[in-house]
Length: 338
Image (cartoon, rainbow, N blue to C red; front, side):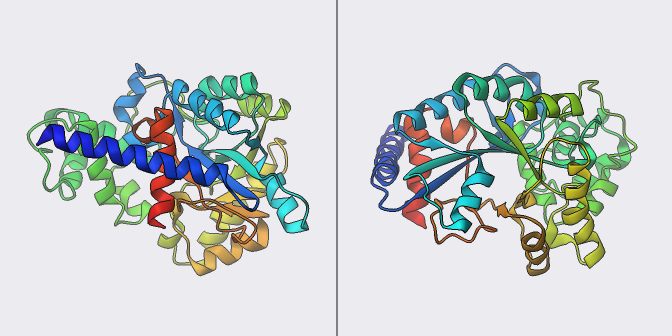
């Protein structure tokens, strides 16, 4: 039975890969493919032990994607330039590819930027303004780190709070695997961000790693000066917009974030990225009034009819993009199901 399942899975990957390749090669009107990444980490990096599997791609995976789209004669573009040309009615490439990196991880500088320079490929990094130049950690990473500890090693109050959301896991018996911890993170997403931060006392609890996980000004400016990397806004605190009920909080996350990033002198901030892909009417209205365009987490291709404040992307990680066939299959499966 296991062999049969493996054969079926392989056949499906091949079929979806063909669909993806055919669609990219036979585009009848200008098409934009936006590739999304979060963390770029070597396969042996210990930082993978506190990260959601769907958030990590190796440098080799990213390299293979750049080679793949070069082989398809795609035009790598700055996302903001494509949006500007689209809105102005100017001529667009038949097949354009834009790279985006969410959150502003330091490893984007260490491992992705050298590849962008190697291939001379432009990219946009979406930044969370209040995390830059700090040792702060996003709550999912902190939750994974805590849940991977043995129960006796966790702070008692945090352990009791997290246990409420760890049903179906051996949370009370042992440290969780990365996959089990990822499930706990998904369970917590039913809560608003402030409740989660309060529950894990993120700002008070010491982080055992002394390494800085988020970009700093020096790295931002070096990448900006290359002409290859531009930056967009990803809110101030990475709060999910659908969980913010008052207008003032929305304005802080959407508008003030833009002002804070522009004060860093790293170039215009004309694009926005919705945290977790969560959108509300009020939030989208603010984004539309302050940004040239915005990215969602919805899978799919973009063309001249796609709303520029609801751009679709393909989120890649090692699980769905470590080979040419898997990468094309990820695209093809999305197109087949849409």
